Image (cartoon, rainbow, N blue to C red; front, side, top):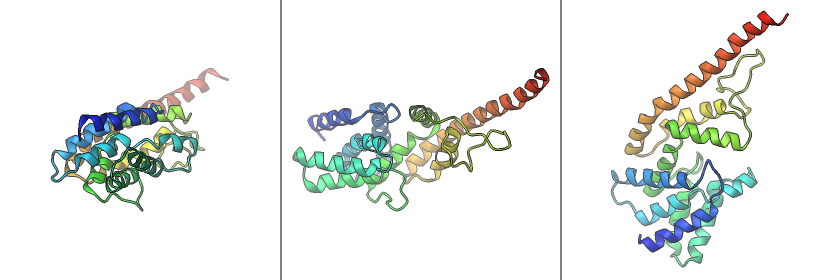
Length: 225
């Protein structure tokens, strides 16, 4: 890919990004993750991979406005149309579309091509470890969701069986389970390095929260008659 093409795609991406949890820096991290993973693979089509990385989240606005819309599908179609409008070949535009369509969590639509698998892994790496925790907390703040939910017993829920959204629920539902979902060997290695950081953060946060409630209730009963 030449610099002119890269700048064309980058500028379009910058026009589309409007979400602090999925901002342009997320796009660059995914791209850099993808390039790191690609170093250990053979026959990577970098023209397809770079375009797919740059454009993979351009459908986020459509999903934010209508939660029933998949940002992966909306973004894939949006990228496909844009590439055709810019004079790229239909075959190339379709390859990029397929990568973007399958980069999200969708069991019925797994990644097929090597480039699609690298994009999937690169995107999931940005949901692992400390960066994954930070991005999730930012997003929960944007949509006004809490850190945790309370059980009928008055205890803090671990999030494991919650249906109501919260950071703890997101951690137990997605963040804790992403480490078994990677396609490439390199991504699995990188993700494993990040797993402990995320687990320790969740454990410490849960301990601090539950301790506040347990100790606080005892003190409240002592001073309030």
